[in-house]
Length: 500
Image (cartoon, rainbow, N blue to C red):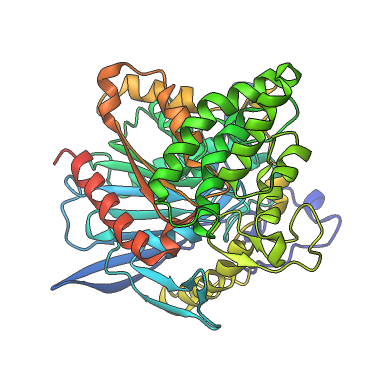
């Protein structure tokens, strides 16, 4: 929001040290409340939307003396609460996307919230200025919702005098988002409500970490976590020298995308996936590990099978030494038709200025959804939620993403699988819902299965985990049939895990 200009007189603070600092340095919550009605079948859900920024503060202690609370950040959120509900029975879901550096716009206006974007789908994109309609399948019918934009995303910003980079890392992100959850829960009297987290992409990393953090720091035990397009172990999907695991984890997704684009004829997708999964976890993984120890005939067989599954030429697979990186795959699959396929969603296709390059210039699936979601959010917040702020709403900050710190994991891979397992062992009632898209070329479903299978929990807790798969990509809800089914799946999960 616009702030008053600071006093630029150099001697002002020196001459009058007791003069209060300008309001810009004393931020306050700027929440706005509006009333709405959502038609759901024959029902009309009356709900309250609360939108704006809340101030995060830290306790300052100097030489053992308490010096008060210092503002650290202003975090934007949008909360939806059902009017007249018994808060001890009514669940609440805290939702966020990932990036790192993404706002919560995608889950908010894509699948969970009471309003949703009309953006079209692969091959049938809606034209600008797009549309915004009631979401009759909103999770609001079963749970209150709180969408959180981490610092430097959406309208969230650090407080005056605080470095934004202080929040751009694994641990400070957990601490700040966890503090938002604690504050909202306390201020709204929701400690006795069933509580859930819903995260997408890096948001699943955050959600798994938060499950342990909320328990350890605040004694807040959750009922459930919804992990959408998961990344819990980065070693399964980060292509780096010496790490062959991602190549095997991505192969079934490559096969699925190749199938979608006609590379497997009329074979059922289920058959292609079963073959790819078996090959990836056995012969292909062994071949990658064997390296030069493979005989010429063995290598030729693996090249042929890999190429057939991925929909690529044997020459290409041979040239990349059996190792197909995901952006290179998206650029190569339809090269003969001078098209590239989406990374986030392999169903989408686009053009590149240079059809000979190794890495596409832009992800056509991101290009397809960025405009509709941005337009809808900016209209919705100002016109319907009546929150006004002249700052740009940061949909997805690449500056945050590129500068993200994982210093907590120095000399080891980034993983939160251990934190999720710790949370589940300490809270045996914690339920986990895991959603994956078969055409997701960013967080492959097979990598998620690999991580879940190795989760260090006792056998009796395995039944606390459920999985769901959709014929779509990373944001599976951009596919209409998947959106409707996913909404049903999430609602069923919340009702079951609420223990009410």
